[in-house]
View 1: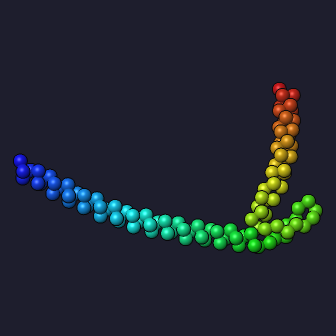
View 2: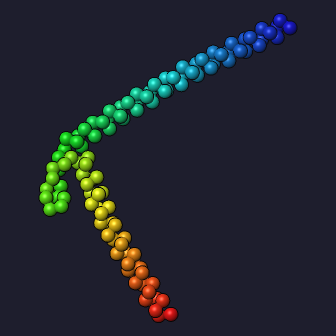
View 3: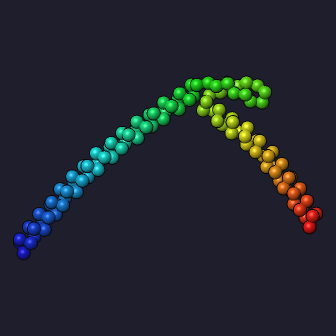
Length: 106
């Protein structure tokens, strides 16, 4: 009985050492990944700041505005969104005209 108990304790001790070593390796891996993420975050921050510094000349409603490149995409998006509404309305009206022409032919 004593021998069995000693064997169980030895096996558990070995398993504990294995798990401890594995945890140390995983912690090292996690730290490496965190360092890589911090480097990527720093690169993104630098690029974002560079985008704010660069100034572009943007034509908007017949006047020139100086805006950062970061905001330029937003201005372009808003202009295109306004165009889209008009185009959708025109498409609907043409679709209605086509439907009425098709029903008149039947």
